[in-house]
Image 1 (spheres, helix red, strand yellow):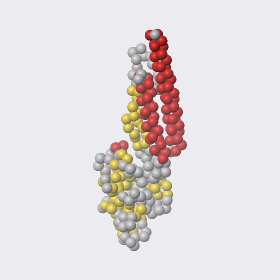
Image 2 (image 1 turned 90 degrees about the vertical axis):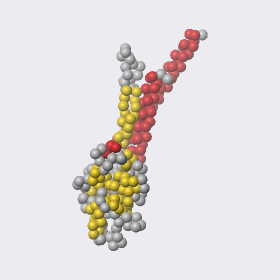
Image 3 (image 1 turned 180 degrees about the horizontal axis):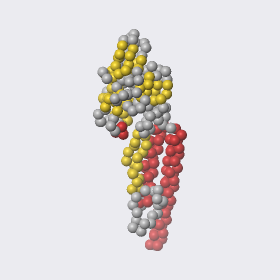
Image 4 (image 1 turned 30 degrees about the vertical axis):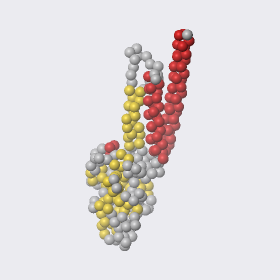
Amino acid sequence: METTSMIALSRQSGLRRQMEVIANNIANVNTTGFKGEKMMFVDHVIRSKSGERTLPEKFHFTRDVATVRDITDGEIQSTGNALDVAINGAGYFVVQTPEGERYTRNGRFQLDQSGRLVTQQGHAVLSDGGAITFGQRDQTIDIAADGTISAESGRLGKLRVVTFDNEMRLRQSGDTLLRTDDAPRNAEKPRVVQGAIEGSNIKPVIEITHMIEVQRSYESLARFIDREDERVKSMMRAFADIAA
């Protein structure tokens, strides 16, 4: 395969993966605490000694090296549910899963049959003292701005909110859970809001615009590859005619 076609295919392959990332962002536009992702590309430009080129300058050899999470906050939405909690600013809730501790911005919590505070998937939400369990007479639940949880039976614990030196090292671990090998640090002054959740930080109009741009670029490259294929075939037929 000629270099020009390889360059075009490298870009087309990157665009396909970029479309998958955009599609996943759009699918999670209503997912509580979801953070969108973007593709990170590296372009390799090689010029001939004569300085001439057969491809437009935008057609570089492209390599997608990683996906980057957009860690900007989503909009805080009031729900009135006492067990819904949003983090205003930096930080992540800590939950216990069979695979170990995981981190999330999704504060749509609930109580299981034993009275434990859990996520929608049933993972225990952790406080500074472990799992949080409510008694049968605990009807009025109060969660202070610093995460302290109180009810009729008194203080039940303080929601554990942690931060990281490098949030970009966090990786998806199913649903809205995140994992990392880096050690978390307890947030010094966490700010939580009871009766609210953090919405996704995805802006649908922007993502759909990106999807259209990627689709058009992909189709343009497909047409270019078809033209290059026809050009090579024409050259081969011409050489065959000369040889005959």
